[in-house]
Length: 143
Image 1 (tube, one colour):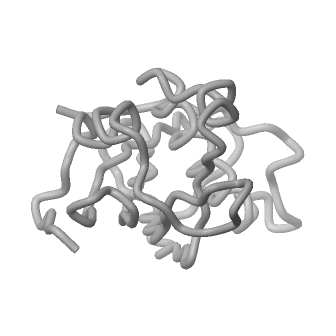
Image 2 (cartoon, rainbow, N blue to C red):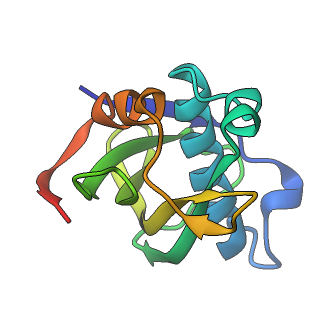
């Protein structure tokens, strides 16, 4: 099972070498993650109601192939690890050209934060249900 989002390369996404700017890869990753959450009931409204939001500790991209204007790009999202209480997690994103060539791999480490207390917290069950439904990497592990 995969969670995949297509993305369209815009002219403004390019650098002076006419390929995708490095920061756009991260923007595409965020777009894919937020889309997954929304598609699984974790909307901005739900986050606001529960005073909870995602934060990142680490975001890393391995660039493997060039992406150029007009390329057909999609992003796969997978859960690589999660703590037993769901407080912390690791996700990966594969950016694919023509649904086959891996152009980049983004890995993030993050957690849920209570937006009032400004502390890392275990999320409510609705969040856990969404994360448990996320496709897993082959090397998925409990943190």
